[in-house]
Each structure stands twice: as structure tokens, then as C-alpha cells.
Image (tube, rainbow, N blue to C red):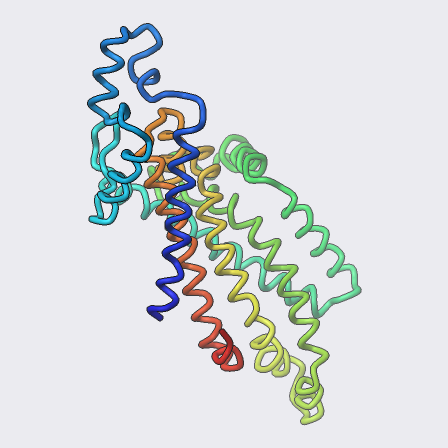
Length: 303
């Protein structure tokens, strides 16, 4: 376990270095954003000194890393708010959105995938395949406004945006969850079709078990095992995809905080958001790997 956690250090360091370099190399200056282009040179230099932006880039990076090792993300250079406080305010909203989308994806994708496999070659299989391909091809920046237009503007069933009520999570979660359901549908169908041709399934049928018992007790259990890995990988993708979805629906999560900080060239906040999302992605995948090894004893001896 400790060895696995140590392997995360190069990944975290790489994310930290890459984010820092990209933010400082892209065009744009936070001082210009804060003071405007008409500000005097003296005011600009004074603000740069106050923010520490007049120091060499290497020194800025070392200071930032040293503070980070002490659990200090720093403060926003625009609002002077503690970044840890900002993350604590927004991260739960992002996790709520990602978990809701995951539940929607599993509840739609797995049953459709099972049905598609059991009806392989029939019109039901073709319709489900067509549905999953169409949904998978819809990007969040197109699907989100479409759902908003239909369910919020035309039908008036759900809020357009914001976080005022529990219903506010439905549309952004659907935007993320439908894409996931399309992937899970295809994976479940493929996995179940492979399992249905295994010898132990034929043995179970030869024993006189009903088709329902064969599917539910033997085939489905084995077919869903590879989905653990897919669900873990997609959970990380949901966190990354929340950047666009949160912006569309005005959801006050880490994704929206990240977009706002990029627009304002708020380097410390941007670095902290990217680092938190990357760490979440890596930790979820490590947890998924451990869960898979626990569920499938055959993989425990592998490196």
C-alpha cells in the first residue's frame, strides 16, 4: 500500500511542474487584469512586488512548493481569500455532481447493456446500439444547453441553472451521466456476450438452472467485474468534465472556480484546482485498482 502511494509522488510533482509552467508561459498578466492597461508603471511594479510576481520563476515555484508541503495552498491574489477555504466550499459540490452523474450512468448503462446482450442481433439490440452511439457523440457543451432548453425553458420542470434546490443537480448530472451510460452500455454488452459463451455457463444450463438464474447468479457477476475499472476511470473523467458542465449550469464547484481563476489569471487558485482534480483522479484510480484486486483473486499476485 505504501509502495503504491509512493508511486503517486512523480505524478503529483509532474502535474505541479506542468501547471506552474503553463500558467506562467501563456500570454496574460494578472496585474493587467487587476489594474487595467492604463495603470502607471509604478503601480504595476508595486503590485507585482506585493504579489511576489517580480521574483524569478524558479524562486516562485520553490516558495509555492514549500508552502504546499505544509498544506498551505496560499491565498487568491484577487480576493485574498484563503484557497483552502475556497476548495472546501466548492469541492463537495463537485463530488455531489460527479457521484450523481455516476449513479445515472450506471442505472441507465448497465441495464441497457444487459438487455442489448440478451437481445443480440435483434431490433432491440440495434436500437440500443444506435442510442449509445448517438449519446456518446454528444459533447457536454452541446448536450447541456439542449437539456436546459427542453426541460427548463420549454417544459419548466427543472431549474435552468444555479444551486438553489435539490432539483438543480438533475440537469448537470444528466449532462455528465448520459455520456457515461453510453460507454457502460457498450462495455456491459461486450463483456456479457463473452461470458455467455464460457464453459461454466453451459454447465450451469446443463444442470437445469433457469435462464434467469444463469444470467443473474453466474454470467452477470463475472461480466460486471471489468466494469469496475471502467467506472473508476470514468469517475476521474467526470471530475474533469465538470469544468465545462459547472460553467454551463452555474454550478459552484471546483470546475467553475478553475475557469474563473483562469480568466482572472489567478495563478495560485488555478494551480490548487488543477492539483486537487489531478489528485482526485489518481487516488480514485488507485482505489479502483485495489477494489478490482479484491474482487478478482486471480489478479492479486500480479504487479
